[in-house]
Image (tube, rainbow, N blue to C red; front, side, top):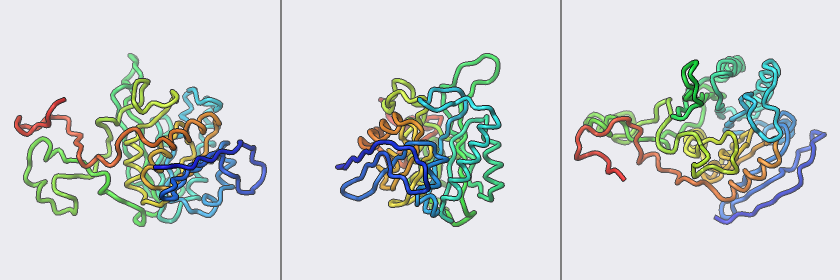
Length: 313
């Protein structure tokens, strides 16, 4: 794809006038664009017309975890009360920006998951799923069990009127991959034979943490999510041409995948350096080949018949 890349200097926003995006990338063939504003999302979001007028189809947020990690200019070690107020403030802005059919996803660790769930329920959003992103390389510790997950909280503005596309994210069922169970080949649930909607614990090839030697790793960002994670979220919760917002752009994975899947993307980022790097990633596109979930299996055992096992490389 060809791209037109536009960049303007970052300016402090001091009025309700709609701020111009600091970075913009447009697909010349389709007109799908990606826009990023530099600044505090709490200041910027109320001034962006699409947010102010509730035009968002999907919000995905992977906020700072308050773990004192390196996020360039951001202070990632607030007092707990301050962090929770910060969290409720940006959540409310995102909720207000959603269409009546819109959905909200939040990627968050154990520390704050319960508080966020309670706040979203109090705001009358409907919980669709409490998913788990599972990875095999957690921080080593000997004083308790090792963390190996982050929560992917999936809420919608309306309990039934939400965008839901299971077909793009289907995977091979265990019944086919392990047991050759004939029942899965004659399903009556509307899904293709031998396929299933993924379970609410997410793992598998290219679903792990983005470590320093990972092909997806860009500019050594401290918290980069896998492209396939975002593909699953965006593909199932939005349609081509929809508007996707990420209030914490970070390394830019949401924008990379949303843009590649033909969605308009909007994002805010506190760090000018991160915003610049994210824009470069969006322009280059994803590292992984998207749209391959239906040819994959997350079965943890081999097929019981040796003759039907997948070939090893």
